[in-house]
Image (cartoon, rainbow, N blue to C red):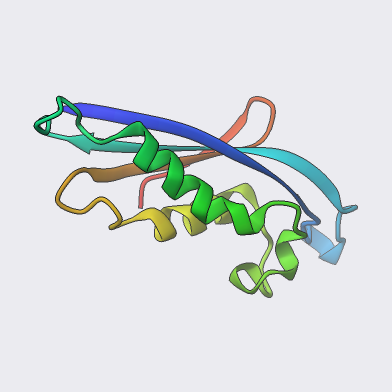
Length: 121
């Protein structure tokens, strides 16, 4: 079994609604995203799945998030744009794109240095 992991990123802000109904101050993060795919065998080029194909998919999904206030986007409307929800959103957008070639195992999102969320569907 091969596990292929590719990392990308984007810059965006959020302001989470905390316990007690207090909204935190809007702040920006340099979000990091990792997507891990598994494959049982290699293709004719000797690849489990091409790094560049995964990188392109991550960029297509995270590109529209860049520079945005995440809670203002339809995909997070009425919800906190927490790292957990960002991970689920990216996972759902990338799932199935590599069907027949590799299986999406997980998406990891780093909101702040050293603070990661891993979602495996």
